[in-house]
Length: 362
Image (tube, rainbow, N blue to C red):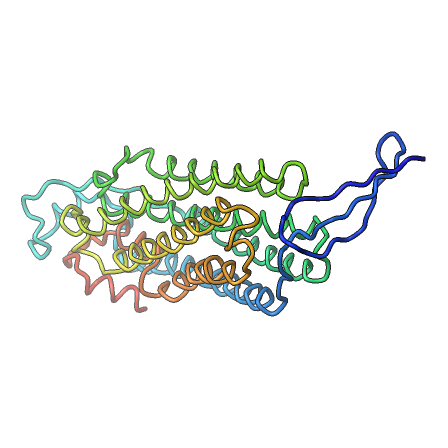
């Protein structure tokens, strides 16, 4: 039976070659020298540290989301028990106000239909799934440490670490979209308000699909350049969409206080939440730009050949994104803003922040 010799030329750098073989469909045994999928040996320590950090973050964030969902329900029940009216249209609240809010003679505020806790929790699910994917990506790098020639862990870590930020971005888009509606500031959106979240999420999904498809092709010796080009396209879309989104967030942050008819009547939780979304967006944007440059340089580029880039410009920014959500959850989260903007209190006593804080502190 004849044999042939070929070489996997994925990397031009001088690396150890591993003799291997496979049997072709016609029965010919093909021998070739396989190059490793990495130009370095992935460290176990770094991957293990971030896998653990993302795991802890997932647990903490899940508990926070559950607790605040439960607290929101409890606060609403407390208002109803006190004889207040939950979800009463804003115009009715204004008609009952005695001037303490400065609402007399002002135009009615369009009421917002409250989101259920299930829908609010759903806005955090992509972030949680992204954390699971991050954990899987770094676990795959640990497996790759023991076998640089195994295509499975290589493709798994490539795809997972590429697409996880796109999942996290979906949570940012959905939180921001709801914030625009709650503060009656949809006019600040640079795209039609009803399509705001949809457009950004669709762009995110397209980026996700391209990066996943490209990452899946990177392990193929004859298609890795095609895979790299597809990844570059996905990252370019992500950078464009995020740049556009960051501009929208900046506009909202600068003008919402002046435009929104409810911003000055509620606590500063909405502002803390938006700053958190803005900072998280910048972190993902920087990460995406670096990874775009990485794949544009190719497999012989400086970034691809040095492992520290994956930690400094990918692992660290992504961990800071979830860390910011966790750290600032108590002072700025969507559940609190939802409660303040939709649970308008209307009784014989005037609506005020003192009343709201009293209900929240119980």
